[in-house]
Image (tube, rainbow, N blue to C red; front, side, top):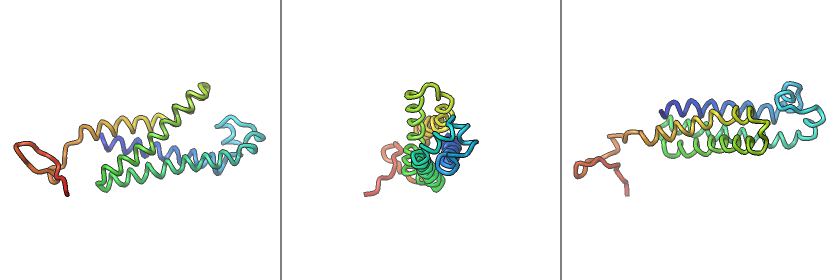
Length: 149
């Protein structure tokens, strides 16, 4: 389940890198204007806002990517926290978009589906994860994690 969560978190991060590219690098291009439904004049007027917003999307992708790498390296706690921060913010932004502009439901679904799936799968994976026998001791016939003092 955790592996599937990492895949969906990775897809969400890649999508947000693409969104960064559109918002920060190609905002005034014909293709990007068509994707966002803006005119050349609107794109020129909002170029600085889009540039800044694009970097928010890039930073969320980076946080998510670092979280994926941390989990892959066995640092599940910090990795999960970073993934939840990244994809949780992505999914929340999709909810805000949907609530503030219902006509943008398709965009909200596109931007929020992978992150939402990643959150659900990561929660299930962490809750059902078996403890690592190497880091546990037996005491009174109960297996407990070793706590270092």
